[in-house]
Length: 97
Image 1 (cartoon, rainbow, N blue to C red):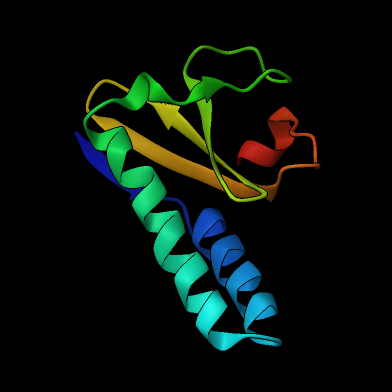
Image 2 (image 1 turned 90 degrees about the vertical axis):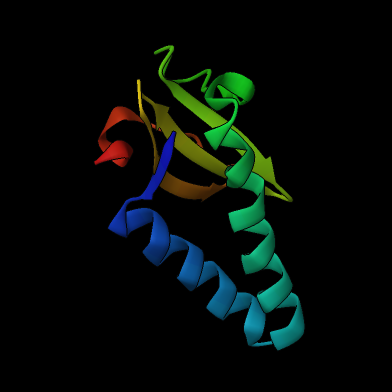
């Protein structure tokens, strides 16, 4: 199983880490390491994340890292990380580009 991050998801993870780093650079580094660790398990078990309730498509799933949702698409040989969002924000189909 291959793990691929979309440019959008990488940019969002970086923006979140940059925001955290304004107050605590060490916490930002720890958060960023944690987000990559959180998705590594998907290479062994891509269906371990829950289905995104507001999308209702079985291949669109999420794992949590702290207060953030990591949204991904589980495919036959690839897990595609689509977006990273705060847990309080709802997701729509247009956010998956």
